[in-house]
Figure (tube, rainbow, N blue to C red):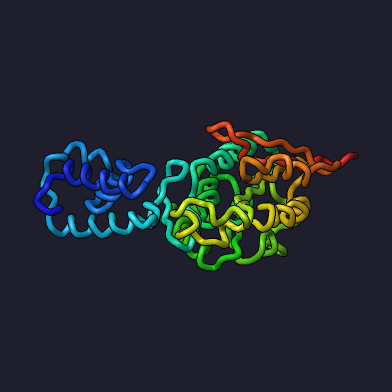
Length: 290
């Protein structure tokens, strides 16, 4: 690949990735080359006639080789954009998805009409994308985050530090780490993007997901709702009256998750993502009757 222009390098890489079954070969080729050069993708178009030197060509070839095995682009670059912010990612954490931005946007809308203290909890924080985004976009909000993975929390703490926001991180199961930290009825919002893939569906996931992303961040038990089934009663204790529990789910889980909140304690609904698929379960804790 040395001795060719940037434009030619992208063209050849795109063809290679397309042959290997990449879903977005041109985009992948551009992102990886821009990463190697320490530039943005616009630079590749502006300087398409520039020669690719030998050292950069070698680094690019190695990344392309790894990409052909299915390794996600975000792991190859170590970065992923979420809510317009750059986050560090790696094999220890699930890669943030665009559909999860719906959860953050909904939470931000809730804060605008919230009269009490703005307290948000991110359960299963992973890379910290949700928690850090909330802390950046709602600076008056106190943000708490938990995860069962100490390795994931290390990444989340890095991201909070990079974005210079205060987030309390607790290591442990679901809301357990916040016992003694937050009082009952304290949270305005609890956001949860927990593993929700049914166990039987895991082997059928795309190669770059099942082969590279942490399985513990994907496996939601027999029906995918095992962790949500345990979270809902915990959230009821921690949420303030009128507070909301936000849960990202799979498109075929709307009816099942609504059944978990089908009682006099909750008002629940499911919102679609940008593709029109059921994605965000919203459960509001009913206010106590006087």
